Image (cartoon, rainbow over all chains, first blue to last red; front, side, top):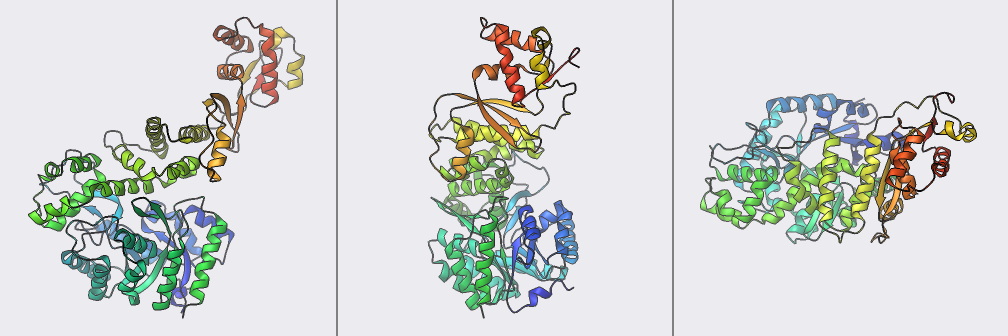
Length: 289
Length: 288
Protein backbone atom coordinates (compact mmCIF):
# COMPACT_ATOMS: atom_id res chain seq x y z
CA UNK A 1 0.00 0.00 0.00
CA UNK A 2 1.22 3.47 -0.83
CA UNK A 3 1.21 5.26 2.52
CA UNK A 4 0.80 8.58 0.73
CA UNK A 5 -2.30 7.51 -1.16
CA UNK A 6 -4.80 8.77 1.44
CA UNK A 7 -3.29 12.24 1.18
CA UNK A 8 -4.21 12.38 -2.52
CA UNK A 9 -7.92 12.28 -1.73
CA UNK A 10 -9.91 15.39 -2.79
CA UNK A 11 -10.99 15.81 0.81
CA UNK A 12 -8.52 16.23 3.65
CA UNK A 13 -7.64 13.26 5.78
CA UNK A 14 -8.39 13.72 9.47
CA UNK A 15 -5.72 12.70 11.94
CA UNK A 16 -4.40 13.02 15.46
CA UNK A 17 -1.07 14.09 16.86
CA UNK A 18 0.53 11.09 18.54
CA UNK A 19 0.55 10.42 22.25
CA UNK A 20 0.27 7.22 24.25
CA UNK A 21 -3.40 8.03 24.91
CA UNK A 22 -3.98 8.64 21.20
CA UNK A 23 -2.32 5.29 20.40
CA UNK A 24 -4.81 3.59 22.74
CA UNK A 25 -7.70 5.55 21.27
CA UNK A 26 -6.74 4.46 17.75
CA UNK A 27 -6.56 0.85 18.86
CA UNK A 28 -10.03 1.06 20.42
CA UNK A 29 -11.62 3.00 17.57
CA UNK A 30 -10.26 1.68 14.27
CA UNK A 31 -11.51 3.69 11.33
CA UNK A 32 -12.07 6.92 13.26
CA UNK A 33 -8.69 8.36 12.34
CA UNK A 34 -7.11 8.59 8.88
CA UNK A 35 -3.55 9.44 9.83
CA UNK A 36 -1.32 10.04 12.82
CA UNK A 37 1.22 12.81 13.11
CA UNK A 38 4.40 11.96 14.99
CA UNK A 39 7.18 14.31 16.05
CA UNK A 40 10.63 13.36 14.89
CA UNK A 41 11.92 14.12 18.38
CA UNK A 42 9.69 11.40 19.83
CA UNK A 43 10.77 8.86 17.20
CA UNK A 44 14.41 9.60 17.92
CA UNK A 45 13.74 8.98 21.61
CA UNK A 46 11.47 5.97 21.12
CA UNK A 47 11.54 4.35 17.64
CA UNK A 48 9.02 1.73 18.84
CA UNK A 49 6.36 4.39 18.24
CA UNK A 50 6.78 3.59 14.53
CA UNK A 51 4.67 0.48 15.08
CA UNK A 52 1.56 2.57 14.67
CA UNK A 53 2.53 2.97 11.03
CA UNK A 54 1.28 -0.57 10.48
CA UNK A 55 -2.23 0.71 11.20
CA UNK A 56 -2.22 4.24 9.85
CA UNK A 57 -0.27 6.52 7.52
CA UNK A 58 2.20 8.74 9.36
CA UNK A 59 2.90 12.43 8.89
CA UNK A 60 6.29 13.41 10.23
CA UNK A 61 6.39 16.57 12.30
CA UNK A 62 9.58 18.25 13.40
CA UNK A 63 10.86 20.94 15.74
CA UNK A 64 14.60 20.47 15.31
CA UNK A 65 15.57 22.10 12.04
CA UNK A 66 15.49 25.64 13.48
CA UNK A 67 14.86 26.89 9.93
CA UNK A 68 14.40 30.50 10.98
CA UNK A 69 17.38 30.49 13.28
CA UNK A 70 20.94 31.64 12.94
CA UNK A 71 22.33 28.36 14.32
CA UNK A 72 22.27 25.57 11.82
CA UNK A 73 20.84 22.16 12.64
CA UNK A 74 23.46 19.43 13.09
CA UNK A 75 24.12 17.22 10.07
CA UNK A 76 23.53 14.13 12.19
CA UNK A 77 20.02 15.35 13.09
CA UNK A 78 19.24 16.08 9.45
CA UNK A 79 20.31 12.56 8.49
CA UNK A 80 18.06 11.11 11.21
CA UNK A 81 15.09 13.15 9.96
CA UNK A 82 15.80 11.93 6.44
CA UNK A 83 15.87 8.33 7.61
CA UNK A 84 12.58 8.64 9.50
CA UNK A 85 10.97 10.42 6.55
CA UNK A 86 11.97 7.49 4.34
CA UNK A 87 10.90 4.88 6.88
CA UNK A 88 7.51 6.44 7.65
CA UNK A 89 6.83 7.31 3.99
CA UNK A 90 5.51 10.61 5.20
CA UNK A 91 4.01 12.76 2.42
CA UNK A 92 5.77 15.84 3.83
CA UNK A 93 7.65 17.07 6.88
CA UNK A 94 5.99 19.81 8.89
CA UNK A 95 8.47 22.14 10.60
CA UNK A 96 7.98 25.27 12.69
CA UNK A 97 8.88 28.60 11.16
CA UNK A 98 10.94 29.29 14.23
CA UNK A 99 14.25 28.82 15.93
CA UNK A 100 14.96 26.40 18.73
CA UNK A 101 18.65 27.03 19.32
CA UNK A 102 21.11 29.89 19.03
CA UNK A 103 24.87 30.09 18.94
CA UNK A 104 26.74 31.39 21.93
CA UNK A 105 28.92 34.24 20.77
CA UNK A 106 32.43 34.42 22.15
CA UNK A 107 31.84 38.06 23.01
CA UNK A 108 28.87 37.33 25.21
CA UNK A 109 29.28 36.83 28.93
CA UNK A 110 28.16 33.39 29.96
CA UNK A 111 28.93 32.77 33.59
CA UNK A 112 25.89 30.47 34.06
CA UNK A 113 26.57 28.42 30.97
CA UNK A 114 24.48 25.26 31.02
CA UNK A 115 26.25 23.27 28.33
CA UNK A 116 29.74 24.53 27.62
CA UNK A 117 30.63 24.55 23.93
CA UNK A 118 27.05 23.88 22.86
CA UNK A 119 24.54 26.38 21.47
CA UNK A 120 21.67 27.54 23.65
CA UNK A 121 19.04 24.83 23.26
CA UNK A 122 15.68 26.33 24.15
CA UNK A 123 13.78 23.05 23.92
CA UNK A 124 10.80 24.88 22.43
CA UNK A 125 10.28 26.64 19.11
CA UNK A 126 10.37 30.44 19.21
CA UNK A 127 9.04 32.84 16.61
CA UNK A 128 12.03 34.56 15.01
CA UNK A 129 12.96 38.15 14.33
CA UNK A 130 10.67 38.92 11.41
CA UNK A 131 12.61 41.02 8.93
CA UNK A 132 14.16 40.80 5.46
CA UNK A 133 17.39 39.28 6.80
CA UNK A 134 15.52 36.39 8.40
CA UNK A 135 13.48 35.87 5.23
CA UNK A 136 16.71 35.55 3.26
CA UNK A 137 18.05 33.05 5.77
CA UNK A 138 14.84 30.99 5.74
CA UNK A 139 14.78 30.97 1.93
CA UNK A 140 18.35 29.73 1.91
CA UNK A 141 17.56 27.02 4.47
CA UNK A 142 14.43 25.87 2.66
CA UNK A 143 16.30 25.70 -0.63
CA UNK A 144 18.99 23.55 0.96
CA UNK A 145 16.47 21.26 2.66
CA UNK A 146 14.48 20.87 -0.58
CA UNK A 147 17.61 19.27 -2.05
CA UNK A 148 18.17 17.20 1.06
CA UNK A 149 14.77 15.64 1.72
CA UNK A 150 12.84 13.49 -0.71
CA UNK A 151 9.53 14.92 0.45
CA UNK A 152 8.50 18.56 0.73
CA UNK A 153 8.99 20.56 3.88
CA UNK A 154 6.02 22.59 5.15
CA UNK A 155 6.43 25.63 7.36
CA UNK A 156 4.16 26.05 10.39
CA UNK A 157 3.15 29.49 11.65
CA UNK A 158 4.44 29.98 15.20
CA UNK A 159 2.39 31.53 17.99
CA UNK A 160 3.69 35.03 18.52
CA UNK A 161 3.83 35.53 22.29
CA UNK A 162 6.09 38.56 22.12
CA UNK A 163 7.62 40.59 19.33
CA UNK A 164 11.26 39.74 18.84
CA UNK A 165 13.40 42.90 18.86
CA UNK A 166 14.32 43.91 15.32
CA UNK A 167 11.09 42.67 13.74
CA UNK A 168 9.88 44.96 10.98
CA UNK A 169 6.85 43.15 9.61
CA UNK A 170 3.68 41.33 10.58
CA UNK A 171 3.72 37.55 10.66
CA UNK A 172 1.31 37.30 7.72
CA UNK A 173 3.69 39.40 5.60
CA UNK A 174 6.66 37.38 6.79
CA UNK A 175 5.03 34.06 5.91
CA UNK A 176 3.65 35.31 2.60
CA UNK A 177 7.08 36.49 1.49
CA UNK A 178 8.66 33.13 2.29
CA UNK A 179 5.92 31.16 0.55
CA UNK A 180 6.14 33.41 -2.48
CA UNK A 181 9.93 33.20 -2.75
CA UNK A 182 10.23 29.46 -2.21
CA UNK A 183 6.86 27.94 -3.11
CA UNK A 184 6.96 26.14 0.24
CA UNK A 185 3.68 24.73 1.54
CA UNK A 186 2.05 25.97 4.72
CA UNK A 187 1.13 24.00 7.80
CA UNK A 188 -1.47 26.35 9.21
CA UNK A 189 -1.92 26.06 12.97
CA UNK A 190 -5.19 27.80 13.73
CA UNK A 191 -4.61 28.06 17.49
CA UNK A 192 -1.25 29.73 16.78
CA UNK A 193 -2.96 32.10 14.38
CA UNK A 194 -5.57 32.98 17.02
CA UNK A 195 -2.88 33.55 19.69
CA UNK A 196 -0.88 35.79 17.34
CA UNK A 197 -3.92 37.82 16.30
CA UNK A 198 -5.18 38.31 19.84
CA UNK A 199 -1.79 39.43 21.12
CA UNK A 200 -1.81 42.22 18.53
CA UNK A 201 -5.51 42.89 19.08
CA UNK A 202 -6.27 41.95 15.48
CA UNK A 203 -9.23 40.18 13.93
CA UNK A 204 -8.14 36.53 13.43
CA UNK A 205 -10.33 36.15 10.35
CA UNK A 206 -8.71 39.16 8.73
CA UNK A 207 -5.28 37.79 9.66
CA UNK A 208 -6.25 34.44 8.15
CA UNK A 209 -7.23 36.16 4.91
CA UNK A 210 -3.81 37.85 4.78
CA UNK A 211 -2.04 34.48 4.70
CA UNK A 212 -1.28 32.67 1.45
CA UNK A 213 -4.13 30.21 1.85
CA UNK A 214 -3.47 28.62 -1.53
CA UNK A 215 -0.24 27.30 0.03
CA UNK A 216 -2.00 25.49 2.88
CA UNK A 217 -1.30 21.75 2.80
CA UNK A 218 -2.07 20.77 6.39
CA UNK A 219 -4.07 22.38 9.20
CA UNK A 220 -3.51 21.97 12.95
CA UNK A 221 -6.39 22.21 15.41
CA UNK A 222 -5.84 22.51 19.16
CA UNK A 223 -6.98 24.32 22.28
CA UNK A 224 -6.07 27.68 23.70
CA UNK A 225 -5.54 28.62 27.34
CA UNK A 226 -6.94 32.07 28.11
CA UNK A 227 -4.95 34.00 30.69
CA UNK A 228 -5.19 37.60 31.87
CA UNK A 229 -2.28 38.56 29.65
CA UNK A 230 -3.39 36.74 26.53
CA UNK A 231 -3.84 33.33 24.96
CA UNK A 232 -1.44 30.42 25.20
CA UNK A 233 -1.21 27.22 23.19
CA UNK A 234 -2.88 24.30 24.95
CA UNK A 235 -3.03 20.80 23.49
CA UNK A 236 -4.84 19.55 26.59
CA UNK A 237 -8.03 21.46 25.83
CA UNK A 238 -10.48 21.19 22.95
CA UNK A 239 -10.38 23.88 20.32
CA UNK A 240 -12.59 26.87 21.11
CA UNK A 241 -15.50 27.63 18.82
CA UNK A 242 -13.55 30.30 16.99
CA UNK A 243 -10.88 27.80 15.89
CA UNK A 244 -13.58 25.66 14.30
CA UNK A 245 -14.97 28.72 12.54
CA UNK A 246 -11.48 29.56 11.32
CA UNK A 247 -11.24 26.01 9.97
CA UNK A 248 -14.50 26.48 8.12
CA UNK A 249 -13.10 29.66 6.59
CA UNK A 250 -9.90 27.84 5.54
CA UNK A 251 -11.95 25.08 3.95
CA UNK A 252 -13.94 27.66 1.97
CA UNK A 253 -10.80 29.17 0.53
CA UNK A 254 -8.18 26.44 0.43
CA UNK A 255 -7.81 22.74 -0.19
CA UNK A 256 -5.71 21.30 2.62
CA UNK A 257 -4.78 17.64 2.27
CA UNK A 258 -4.80 16.89 5.97
CA UNK A 259 -6.27 18.24 9.18
CA UNK A 260 -4.54 17.14 12.37
CA UNK A 261 -6.06 17.53 15.83
CA UNK A 262 -3.31 18.15 18.36
CA UNK A 263 -4.75 16.89 21.63
CA UNK A 264 -1.57 15.25 22.80
CA UNK A 265 -0.59 17.00 26.05
CA UNK A 266 -2.83 15.11 28.43
CA UNK A 267 -3.56 11.43 28.89
CA UNK A 268 -6.86 12.54 30.48
CA UNK A 269 -8.27 14.17 27.37
CA UNK A 270 -11.77 12.62 27.40
CA UNK A 271 -12.32 10.07 24.65
CA UNK A 272 -15.91 11.17 24.15
CA UNK A 273 -14.70 14.72 23.57
CA UNK A 274 -12.06 13.48 21.15
CA UNK A 275 -14.76 11.61 19.23
CA UNK A 276 -16.89 14.78 19.14
CA UNK A 277 -13.98 16.86 17.90
CA UNK A 278 -13.11 14.33 15.20
CA UNK A 279 -16.76 14.19 14.16
CA UNK A 280 -17.04 17.94 14.01
CA UNK A 281 -13.88 18.34 11.92
CA UNK A 282 -14.92 15.49 9.66
CA UNK A 283 -18.31 17.12 9.14
CA UNK A 284 -16.62 20.43 8.28
CA UNK A 285 -14.29 18.73 5.84
CA UNK A 286 -17.10 16.67 4.36
CA UNK A 287 -18.94 19.77 3.33
CA UNK A 288 -15.94 21.51 1.82
CA UNK A 289 -15.73 21.75 -1.95
CA UNK B 1 32.05 36.70 16.92
CA UNK B 2 29.23 37.73 14.65
CA UNK B 3 27.74 41.12 15.41
CA UNK B 4 24.94 40.88 12.85
CA UNK B 5 21.97 42.20 14.86
CA UNK B 6 19.67 39.23 14.23
CA UNK B 7 22.33 36.80 15.42
CA UNK B 8 22.76 38.72 18.64
CA UNK B 9 19.04 39.22 19.19
CA UNK B 10 18.38 35.50 18.81
CA UNK B 11 21.31 34.70 21.04
CA UNK B 12 20.04 37.04 23.76
CA UNK B 13 16.47 35.73 23.48
CA UNK B 14 17.73 32.14 23.62
CA UNK B 15 19.82 33.00 26.64
CA UNK B 16 16.80 34.62 28.34
CA UNK B 17 14.88 31.37 27.85
CA UNK B 18 17.66 29.05 29.05
CA UNK B 19 19.44 31.18 31.64
CA UNK B 20 16.85 32.52 34.13
CA UNK B 21 19.37 34.52 36.23
CA UNK B 22 20.35 36.38 33.06
CA UNK B 23 16.69 37.12 32.30
CA UNK B 24 16.22 38.46 35.84
CA UNK B 25 19.24 40.73 35.38
CA UNK B 26 17.80 41.89 32.08
CA UNK B 27 14.54 42.76 33.83
CA UNK B 28 16.15 44.63 36.71
CA UNK B 29 19.06 46.30 34.89
CA UNK B 30 18.77 46.02 31.14
CA UNK B 31 21.79 48.16 30.27
CA UNK B 32 24.13 46.22 32.53
CA UNK B 33 22.87 42.85 31.30
CA UNK B 34 23.31 43.82 27.65
CA UNK B 35 26.59 45.67 28.13
CA UNK B 36 28.83 42.92 26.82
CA UNK B 37 26.79 42.37 23.66
CA UNK B 38 27.88 44.52 20.71
CA UNK B 39 24.35 45.54 19.75
CA UNK B 40 23.86 48.56 17.54
CA UNK B 41 21.81 51.50 18.83
CA UNK B 42 18.62 50.31 17.09
CA UNK B 43 18.82 46.77 18.46
CA UNK B 44 19.55 48.12 21.95
CA UNK B 45 16.52 50.41 21.68
CA UNK B 46 14.40 47.47 20.47
CA UNK B 47 15.35 45.54 23.61
CA UNK B 48 14.39 48.51 25.77
CA UNK B 49 10.91 48.34 24.20
CA UNK B 50 10.57 44.58 24.63
CA UNK B 51 8.16 43.40 27.31
CA UNK B 52 10.56 41.40 29.45
CA UNK B 53 7.86 40.27 31.88
CA UNK B 54 6.07 38.74 28.90
CA UNK B 55 9.31 36.99 27.96
CA UNK B 56 9.58 35.71 31.53
CA UNK B 57 6.03 34.33 31.29
CA UNK B 58 6.91 32.71 27.97
CA UNK B 59 9.85 31.03 29.69
CA UNK B 60 7.40 29.81 32.35
CA UNK B 61 5.07 28.56 29.64
CA UNK B 62 7.91 26.53 28.10
CA UNK B 63 8.65 25.07 31.53
CA UNK B 64 4.97 24.19 31.96
CA UNK B 65 4.83 22.38 28.61
CA UNK B 66 8.02 20.52 29.45
CA UNK B 67 6.30 19.23 32.60
CA UNK B 68 3.17 17.85 30.91
CA UNK B 69 4.04 14.40 32.25
CA UNK B 70 3.35 15.63 35.80
CA UNK B 71 -0.38 15.90 35.38
CA UNK B 72 -0.99 12.15 35.23
CA UNK B 73 0.13 12.09 38.88
CA UNK B 74 -1.00 15.54 40.05
CA UNK B 75 -4.32 16.19 38.28
CA UNK B 76 -6.04 18.03 41.14
CA UNK B 77 -2.90 20.05 41.88
CA UNK B 78 -2.88 21.12 38.27
CA UNK B 79 -6.57 22.04 38.26
CA UNK B 80 -5.99 24.21 41.32
CA UNK B 81 -2.96 25.90 39.75
CA UNK B 82 -5.19 26.68 36.79
CA UNK B 83 -8.08 27.75 39.00
CA UNK B 84 -5.90 30.24 40.88
CA UNK B 85 -4.37 31.32 37.53
CA UNK B 86 -0.83 30.87 38.77
CA UNK B 87 0.31 27.98 36.56
CA UNK B 88 2.54 30.00 34.21
CA UNK B 89 3.80 32.28 36.99
CA UNK B 90 4.71 29.28 39.11
CA UNK B 91 6.67 27.71 36.27
CA UNK B 92 8.33 31.05 35.51
CA UNK B 93 9.45 31.11 39.13
CA UNK B 94 10.47 27.43 38.96
CA UNK B 95 12.44 27.84 35.72
CA UNK B 96 15.69 28.71 37.52
CA UNK B 97 15.48 25.46 39.48
CA UNK B 98 14.41 23.39 36.46
CA UNK B 99 17.40 24.60 34.47
CA UNK B 100 19.87 24.74 37.31
CA UNK B 101 23.23 23.37 36.31
CA UNK B 102 24.12 23.00 39.99
CA UNK B 103 21.40 20.47 40.81
CA UNK B 104 20.37 18.73 37.61
CA UNK B 105 17.52 16.25 38.02
CA UNK B 106 18.49 13.04 36.28
CA UNK B 107 15.40 10.87 36.29
CA UNK B 108 11.74 11.67 35.93
CA UNK B 109 11.27 10.73 39.59
CA UNK B 110 13.94 13.26 40.58
CA UNK B 111 12.15 15.89 38.52
CA UNK B 112 8.80 15.11 40.12
CA UNK B 113 10.25 15.32 43.64
CA UNK B 114 11.98 18.59 42.83
CA UNK B 115 8.80 20.06 41.35
CA UNK B 116 6.70 18.98 44.35
CA UNK B 117 9.26 20.37 46.82
CA UNK B 118 9.32 23.72 45.09
CA UNK B 119 5.55 23.94 44.72
CA UNK B 120 5.11 23.11 48.42
CA UNK B 121 7.44 25.98 49.31
CA UNK B 122 5.66 28.29 46.86
CA UNK B 123 2.23 27.39 48.29
CA UNK B 124 3.38 27.75 51.90
CA UNK B 125 4.15 31.40 51.16
CA UNK B 126 0.63 31.97 49.78
CA UNK B 127 -2.02 30.83 52.27
CA UNK B 128 -4.88 32.13 50.11
CA UNK B 129 -4.51 29.14 47.77
CA UNK B 130 -7.07 27.04 49.65
CA UNK B 131 -6.79 23.34 49.05
CA UNK B 132 -3.62 23.46 46.96
CA UNK B 133 -1.21 22.42 49.71
CA UNK B 134 -3.43 19.46 50.71
CA UNK B 135 -4.04 18.35 47.11
CA UNK B 136 -0.31 18.49 46.37
CA UNK B 137 0.64 16.62 49.53
CA UNK B 138 -2.00 13.95 48.98
CA UNK B 139 -1.16 13.41 45.32
CA UNK B 140 2.53 13.35 46.14
CA UNK B 141 1.98 10.74 48.87
CA UNK B 142 -0.02 8.61 46.41
CA UNK B 143 2.71 8.95 43.79
CA UNK B 144 5.44 8.06 46.30
CA UNK B 145 3.50 5.01 47.47
CA UNK B 146 3.24 3.85 43.86
CA UNK B 147 7.00 4.17 43.48
CA UNK B 148 7.67 1.58 46.19
CA UNK B 149 8.54 -1.75 44.68
CA UNK B 150 6.18 -4.57 45.71
CA UNK B 151 7.57 -6.79 48.42
CA UNK B 152 7.03 -10.50 48.93
CA UNK B 153 4.05 -11.37 51.04
CA UNK B 154 5.08 -12.09 54.61
CA UNK B 155 5.42 -15.76 55.38
CA UNK B 156 4.18 -17.56 58.47
CA UNK B 157 1.05 -15.46 58.81
CA UNK B 158 -1.44 -16.44 61.45
CA UNK B 159 -5.10 -16.75 60.52
CA UNK B 160 -7.39 -14.25 62.20
CA UNK B 161 -9.36 -16.88 64.00
CA UNK B 162 -6.22 -18.49 65.24
CA UNK B 163 -4.78 -15.16 66.39
CA UNK B 164 -7.99 -14.37 68.22
CA UNK B 165 -7.77 -17.67 70.05
CA UNK B 166 -4.17 -17.24 71.12
CA UNK B 167 -3.32 -16.81 74.75
CA UNK B 168 -2.23 -13.25 75.58
CA UNK B 169 1.35 -14.32 76.17
CA UNK B 170 1.49 -15.91 72.67
CA UNK B 171 -0.29 -12.98 71.06
CA UNK B 172 2.45 -10.68 72.37
CA UNK B 173 5.03 -12.70 70.40
CA UNK B 174 3.31 -12.12 67.04
CA UNK B 175 5.06 -9.85 64.55
CA UNK B 176 2.69 -7.48 62.71
CA UNK B 177 3.74 -6.79 59.13
CA UNK B 178 2.26 -4.60 56.46
CA UNK B 179 1.46 -6.41 53.23
CA UNK B 180 1.20 -3.23 51.21
CA UNK B 181 3.05 0.07 51.55
CA UNK B 182 1.33 2.45 53.98
CA UNK B 183 1.69 6.15 54.70
CA UNK B 184 0.16 8.10 57.54
CA UNK B 185 -0.49 11.74 56.77
CA UNK B 186 -2.29 14.59 58.52
CA UNK B 187 -4.66 16.76 56.48
CA UNK B 188 -6.92 19.62 57.40
CA UNK B 189 -9.67 18.11 55.26
CA UNK B 190 -10.62 14.78 53.70
CA UNK B 191 -8.09 14.65 50.83
CA UNK B 192 -10.11 12.14 48.81
CA UNK B 193 -13.16 14.39 48.87
CA UNK B 194 -10.98 17.41 48.13
CA UNK B 195 -9.44 15.81 45.03
CA UNK B 196 -12.82 14.52 43.84
CA UNK B 197 -14.35 18.00 44.25
CA UNK B 198 -11.53 19.70 42.39
CA UNK B 199 -11.57 17.22 39.53
CA UNK B 200 -15.34 17.66 39.28
CA UNK B 201 -14.75 21.39 38.93
CA UNK B 202 -16.17 22.39 42.31
CA UNK B 203 -14.28 25.47 43.48
CA UNK B 204 -13.31 26.77 45.92
CA UNK B 205 -12.40 23.59 47.76
CA UNK B 206 -13.87 22.84 51.15
CA UNK B 207 -12.73 24.76 54.22
CA UNK B 208 -10.29 23.22 56.60
CA UNK B 209 -11.57 21.62 59.80
CA UNK B 210 -8.56 20.93 61.96
CA UNK B 211 -5.93 18.23 61.65
CA UNK B 212 -7.19 14.78 60.74
CA UNK B 213 -5.11 11.64 60.30
CA UNK B 214 -5.37 9.37 57.30
CA UNK B 215 -3.69 6.14 56.38
CA UNK B 216 -2.91 5.68 52.71
CA UNK B 217 -2.43 2.12 51.58
CA UNK B 218 -1.24 1.11 48.13
CA UNK B 219 -2.77 -2.10 46.87
CA UNK B 220 -1.07 -4.48 44.47
CA UNK B 221 -3.11 -3.05 41.59
CA UNK B 222 -1.53 0.36 42.38
CA UNK B 223 -4.79 1.80 43.70
CA UNK B 224 -4.35 3.86 46.84
CA UNK B 225 -6.98 3.37 49.54
CA UNK B 226 -7.33 6.24 51.99
CA UNK B 227 -8.99 5.86 55.40
CA UNK B 228 -9.31 8.25 58.31
CA UNK B 229 -7.85 6.87 61.53
CA UNK B 230 -7.56 7.86 65.17
CA UNK B 231 -4.37 9.16 66.68
CA UNK B 232 -3.73 5.98 68.66
CA UNK B 233 -4.12 3.79 65.58
CA UNK B 234 -1.75 6.08 63.70
CA UNK B 235 0.77 5.80 66.52
CA UNK B 236 0.54 2.02 66.57
CA UNK B 237 0.65 1.67 62.77
CA UNK B 238 3.66 3.93 62.54
CA UNK B 239 5.51 1.69 65.01
CA UNK B 240 5.05 -1.40 62.86
CA UNK B 241 8.26 -2.08 61.01
CA UNK B 242 7.95 -5.79 60.23
CA UNK B 243 10.48 -6.71 62.92
CA UNK B 244 8.91 -5.57 66.17
CA UNK B 245 6.63 -7.91 68.08
CA UNK B 246 3.24 -6.90 69.42
CA UNK B 247 4.86 -6.64 72.85
CA UNK B 248 7.51 -4.24 71.60
CA UNK B 249 5.02 -2.08 69.68
CA UNK B 250 2.77 -1.76 72.73
CA UNK B 251 5.75 -0.86 74.90
CA UNK B 252 6.90 1.84 72.47
CA UNK B 253 3.40 3.26 72.23
CA UNK B 254 2.89 3.30 75.98
CA UNK B 255 6.19 5.13 76.42
CA UNK B 256 5.07 7.77 73.88
CA UNK B 257 1.46 8.04 75.02
CA UNK B 258 -1.22 6.31 76.99
CA UNK B 259 1.22 5.01 79.61
CA UNK B 260 -1.65 4.23 81.96
CA UNK B 261 -3.57 2.16 79.43
CA UNK B 262 -3.22 -1.55 80.18
CA UNK B 263 -1.38 -3.51 77.44
CA UNK B 264 -4.32 -5.85 76.83
CA UNK B 265 -6.42 -2.86 75.72
CA UNK B 266 -4.29 -2.66 72.57
CA UNK B 267 -5.16 -6.17 71.40
CA UNK B 268 -8.35 -5.02 69.70
CA UNK B 269 -6.36 -2.64 67.51
CA UNK B 270 -4.15 -5.42 66.13
CA UNK B 271 -7.10 -7.70 65.50
CA UNK B 272 -9.10 -4.98 63.78
CA UNK B 273 -6.10 -3.86 61.67
CA UNK B 274 -5.59 -7.46 60.60
CA UNK B 275 -9.31 -7.79 59.89
CA UNK B 276 -9.12 -4.70 57.67
CA UNK B 277 -6.03 -6.21 55.93
CA UNK B 278 -3.79 -3.31 56.90
CA UNK B 279 -1.47 -5.72 58.64
CA UNK B 280 -0.73 -9.41 58.78
CA UNK B 281 0.07 -11.05 62.07
CA UNK B 282 3.05 -13.29 61.59
CA UNK B 283 4.25 -15.69 64.16
CA UNK B 284 7.18 -17.59 65.43
CA UNK B 285 6.52 -20.86 67.28
CA UNK B 286 4.02 -21.80 68.57
CA UNK B 287 2.23 -19.89 65.78
CA UNK B 288 4.40 -20.97 62.84
